[in-house]
Length: 149
Image (cartoon, rainbow, N blue to C red):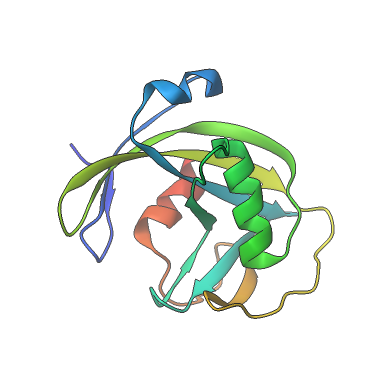
């Protein structure tokens, strides 16, 4: 049974609160996401390719831990520095177009000081979102991650 499906047909199949040291048991562990908060607001980024608001995250590079990936992706995508990073759990996905199964690690962090943001090839802008204001399309899976932390 799925937790949520996004408009591209990608499915979050499950979310498990496991110990971070058990992450290597789940393969392929391909990516890490990080929910960042500044005060009571969430940091979201507008992805130019997917045309939606997302939380930061991406592919785990060779030799990189999921935690290192999450922190790096937050900085690369938003120019923000993660503090008080904590592991939240393991996500299992069925991704399209080939229905492949992948695992991802979900982290959360705080941002103490907002740094200047410059548009990148992937991210057009960032926003601090209070979950009240309408900001447009937020990837359904990323919105679920906000609930899960």
